[in-house]
Image 1 (cartoon, one colour):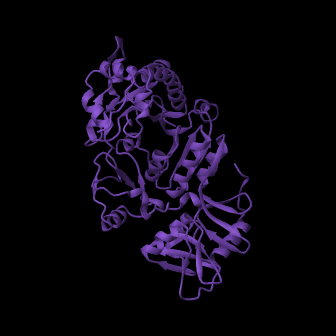
Image 2: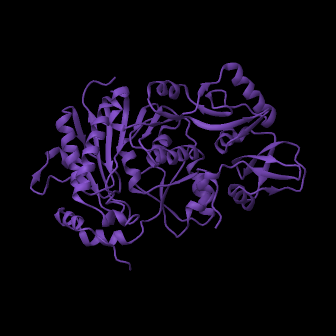
Image 3: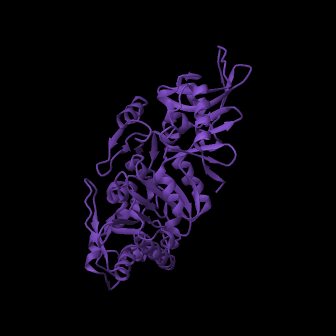
Length: 152
Length: 314
């Protein structure tokens, strides 16, 4: 397993401040945040951490919720779904066709200018994780390859 | 219709099993199983997911023996739907949902899934725990753990620990530690031949006997990881008594505080465990095990047994 450390309270609050600045929410506060490797953040519970200390061969614990890229937080699909109802900033709404394209991993072209580096995509009331906004108005979904719908 | 090839050993096995309808079994091997799904209430409300699917033309029918399980009645490929990749639904065999219902984990409990990959039952347990308690999902195989990790992530589970270890060694660090243990043991897969015809072509008594020794070690290991008054479910998706009744008989011989419990699941056709096979008589308690044959529900065949550890609870 990659190096895993519990986020100290100062690092945890710094992370939540970044979340609030970018997405208008910091709702992970009642759970334990852990850092895996250099930049990945996972969410779990106190009990899970305690049990993991007793186990051998631990490969992972909790849920991958975000990656920190410089000053930005890129939410995973599940990370965005956990925060879904509270995300107030940097949201984009997708049609069903766009949502499918998103999950294929294809960029989505928007007419209007999006003034953010990362946005969270919504399809109906479901969050689909973050996308990176490029200068030409396209949003590139940050969907991992294993998660993508295979094109027929 | 294509012809399925059956090894000589398998023919001998099938005709040695009392009560089994061999013709119906072979017929069921030739047909695909009915598609079934579990809606994931860790991500959204059951009724919301069901109505989303119905709006898209998926015809669903509730499976009576399991919470959150549905038959997909019409011919729709759920695997390619957005709801599947987003983790709102999990494609899982209808009978494969039964062992977790028998285990009946409760929120707040510590649960071990000893042979967890690819994670169908782990994610089902986690769904029932509702984020309270902890599930340890173990597998020995690194490649299979990747599939397990993906499914645990897709289902949005925060209270799961994935470990890679030889399940037989678990009591070295987790003796009498868990409230519930599931041992869904590797087996010769005679209950899911319609998914893999090779299982019938290559089946042999020798392979079954070899696996039964591993299964017994895993069952004993799982039992030793249980707290007093804890519950274990041992399950396989095969029909061979060598991998089922034989394993349980030897488990209760080596662990006298193991008690077999009766199993009740609404709407599931169940047959009692065998008391005799090939002139070998099993302990009468073994009758409490259940066998489900593939032709009974156009789904998998399974062997399931519920075992409690006698003693004061902790």
